[in-house]
Amino acid sequence: MSKNSKILQLVEFVLHGNSYALPIQNVQEIIKLIEIVNVPKAPTFVEGVINLRDKIVPVIDLKKRFSLKAKSIDNSTMSSNTDNSSRIIISDISNYTVGLIVDHVHQVIDVDESSFEKKPDITTSIDQDFIAGMVKHKNKIIIILNPLKILTSSETSNLNIIECNNRP
Image 1 (cartoon, rainbow, N blue to C red):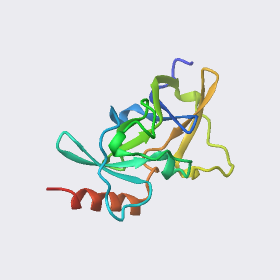
Image 2: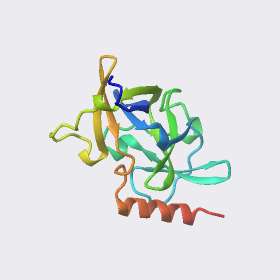
Image 3: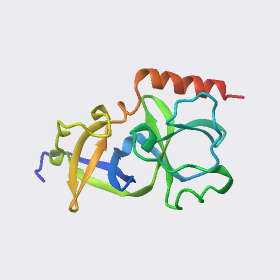
Image 4: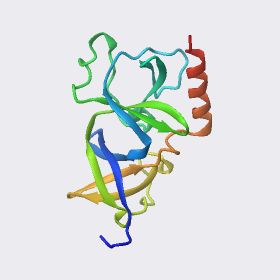
């Protein structure tokens, strides 16, 4: 690390066995899975909404959003189809508060901004606009997500409609 390099804090989590991270400034909190209310005609990657301290929060399954194989969520036995380490990351995405379902949250890591590498120019199961870059940390590669690109503008509009339609 050089004296002039900037240290960034990232929340590291796991999806489908791979490590991902979001900038900590985009993470409000991390909660255990709670009851998710399905919303009719919502996009397939929107699991539904949760009541978080009297605020309706849309919940996105990142594996579905990224076209990765997703575990099914069963509200009657919240842990029957997901293991107990699954979490919802409450995050600021495109000026909206949303919940992001992940398999496991590892830790907050400090990385030197200079260690970021550009995303590879290959086709992956994740649209490359979602990827801000990659970083090597403790012998593993962590994919850094761009919170402004997780949703398209039309998807963000759909979330706004979901939020508005579910307010009392």
